[in-house]
Length: 152
Image (tube, rainbow, N blue to C red):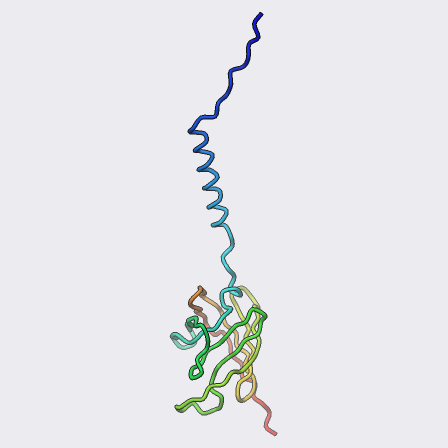
């Protein structure tokens, strides 16, 4: 009797191409599923006023650094912030600006609590971030509380 071998199964060129395409598609899907950067990651940096519609919609644009003669805010990754604003009560030009220091923290989904000093005391402001990208932050100021220094 003759030995009968099972016929060899060969991998076709089409099967190799399909496997490569499947691997490429899987890699792209996996990369696309990577979570988008969080609000906390995107706001780190320096920002200046872009435009507003009252307190309903305020937009900031990202800058390399704050200007000496304009307002702005810098969010640091460690939860601290620098708020550049009027250094005194007078808002009549020419305005002098000063850096005031404080903190920021996420208190709810897309909601931040900012606490910082100003020339007359402290400000606690709650922002609802409606949009954030690498270049802009759009937010609504939900609440702002001014805590004045006590007169002596």
